[in-house]
Image (cartoon, rainbow, N blue to C red; front, side):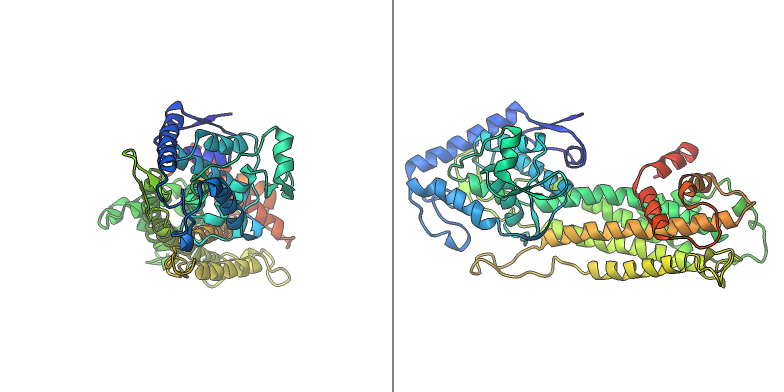
Length: 512
């Protein structure tokens, strides 16, 4: 059990992952509590003075010029949450909702939102009692941030709405709060708006995606190297001096990984001096680091964008230390939407080139003496033929998903919100692309391991031996056709999990 402390300066990506995917407890730093109390005192003074301020004494969106009487301002905040909790569709995964809640606490703790500390503490209580709001997948345009998803979270603080039950079922929030001994919160002026205005949902998904992509891009080097080894490819295109003359850092890192992964292999040694060996390998083999490396550089850019957003005040209006309350556009998800779309394009291409290597491994005319479809008895048996069909279908879907969401603005709120970011859609589909990439790398891993098994008695590289050991426990040796789907699921688990990478790194050191 770890503890994540929310500071008045924010949180780290590791903090978000620890709460979203782990069991970390959350605490508010005293300085953050003090910052919120100071910010709240400014709102209280504005209320006492009777000044018209957006979100404090007025309506919202197209109703920004509608004055709200003091005695109805608490009612205004509650009505805002209820009306904006208007999502539909399947619930978002628990990890996304927990990331979103933690990031909303982070935003409040920066001391620019004008809320009482007890509001942030109530969100912390939900996290620490593992109460996860039911947040539908559709509703956010990434304009005034993730209004509908955040409203579904805030509604639970009021004792209304739904939460995710132990088996994913929908449970009334009032029952869930009662079960863990929590009480509903009554909101004061400005607090409802502060709970829902911000980029927390899309930022949470982007941070989760960055972590997943970092692992998958390393695994893409692993599966590429194993496929190249199984196809009797050359290691020479991955020599460091060839990448020093084109100094893209991601390309150099990927090439260095693949070169190291191919060392110590009797399979590679068997054809190193063969004059009949192809002078040049196909692009899908030779250009693996140029594609995966470009994706790594894209990921570095996205990581910078996400890091900046973690430092940002994204509420509206914001309460400045000098007493001013100013409207901003910081809730607009443009930076995150662009970044997510860019990373989705890169990840889709990492998967596309992996599928091309799978196709070569299965094609008897190009696989350099491997049997057709990697079956020892092709004809009666189809081997991995249809696994490649599945991979091709996933590549086609990723190409559709790589079309950018961030250029697809639709005006809302009576043309007050006349340009929206679609950042929620961009980050959500990015996660789908990465899940699809996991499947594509799993098919390549399965095919590469089959190919290396069929190269026996030649022994593969240390990386190949690790892959044969880890995946071979499930898939067995080449032979008659078996029910293939469980083998593909096992390969997905290996790609997604830490075991194979750890086994390889014990042999050759950390992958770049």
